[in-house]
Amino acid sequence: MNPFLQLSDLFVRPSIRGLLLAFLIFNFAFAGFTSIFVLFLDRRFNWGPSQAALVFVAIGVVSTVVQAGLIRKLLPLWGEVKLAIYGFILLVVGFGLIVVIPRQALLLNLILYTSVTLIAIGVGFVLPSIRGLISNLVSDQEQGKTIGSTQGLQSVAAILGPIWAGWTFDHLGIFTPFLDGCGANAASPGIHP
Image (cartoon, rainbow, N blue to C red; front, side, top):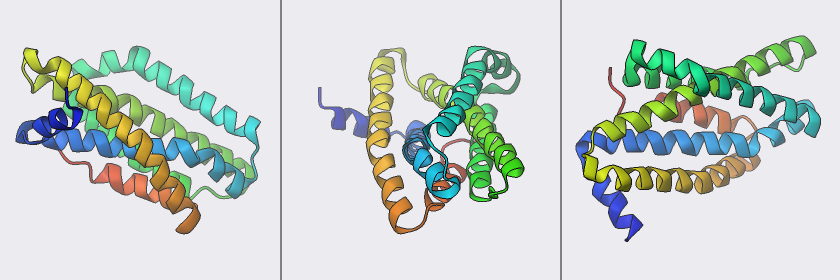
């Protein structure tokens, strides 16, 4: 019943250690992104809640389309490994674009909505792919423990990611959490073609 013991049992397995780390790193970066993005929009572009809400609506719509239909068609074509790699690439590009968004209105909207669309697609590719890869590498008897452990990792990331993103946003600059997201997703271990 000890969750830390169960996590450590999974992390000692070389076959899934990298995937678990990739899952943790991805969730850490994404939780940080979602926690400070509204603050970023306010500080960088002086956007209020209604403008920020539209960005999150766009993210939700794209995520729904990807998860409700697109992923089912792409998984058989590309497989989980390639889909995860493409997802990480989209996340890196999406986070990177946020850093270069100019203040000019036309380009601001174009690049901002492009970046969050890429991030939403990347999330839609990465999450099911990594979960599927991890699930395929453990026995049927370990599925429950594995699913519970990955949920635990996601919860840890949901706590620590916003703390780190908030601290870096305040102390190292408003672009730092997005640069961290680029680096974290670019360096994600465990995914090999």
